[in-house]
Length: 373
Image (cartoon, rainbow, N blue to C red):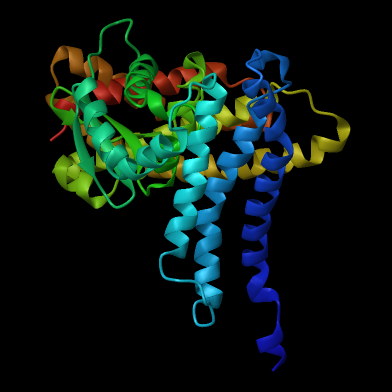
């Protein structure tokens, strides 16, 4: 009986309800000043932070979906609400989001704002899929959908000044331009952020799909400054549908897996670099020591997986032409760098040089992909 009366199962429900209620409450406390300025046809710049009300309203629109799921889970057997209530509730709040978007962006013009806003929401059902297709065309890529990711596969032109970071930034900015209607809060952005697929970029070099696949999270796509988009580039999961397309031999699979481990090492060391560049007081020294010890363990695990490719490198050197032989020998030399890597981390020194070396080895392994069979 006590278990039946327990409030534990309502914790998520209370949290979701609070998320929706507090966001809506903040919106209602803030919107009147903006509305007054618009009705009086004044300049909206006289309102302090006029976008705050929209932020709270849009937050409520995102939170209400999870709230509805919790409500259905707990109260579906007892609810007297009709079957379409949740659908109508969601439509109403997103219609309000679109109405408020118009109010923020325009002076009153005597047009049917509510009707247009509702139609925009209703017609947006296919917004993500339709716009994604246009974005893939804009970057001259192809689209492959998995269960979790929408992979955008694009040929990578490795010119001297076209680094992978620059190419990633270019692709994100091109996609952003296609999704420009989603940059500001509206039902279009809501459709984008609440659908299940995450975008990912797959570089292709000389017809070979890169084993390093990079996530394009929506905050980078919509909100991040151009100069910071590739800082850093996060690797993401490679789903079976993409692995099948890669159609790799055992040697190529091993090479690809080693490249992935090298990319993960680089990401860990970049995060470590951000930490060591921050001043640390005595209270944090113990935590820093524990962090470096944990990081060394993580790097050691990744390194052991990375050097599984060592024998393959030796085999490739035996049959390589002069140019590839030089590149392979650079990779071979890197196999002796673990102690240096561990020393830099344990002594809490700046790893900039190591990061540059790892980037160089990553590029070389990428260049050698067509030679691995």
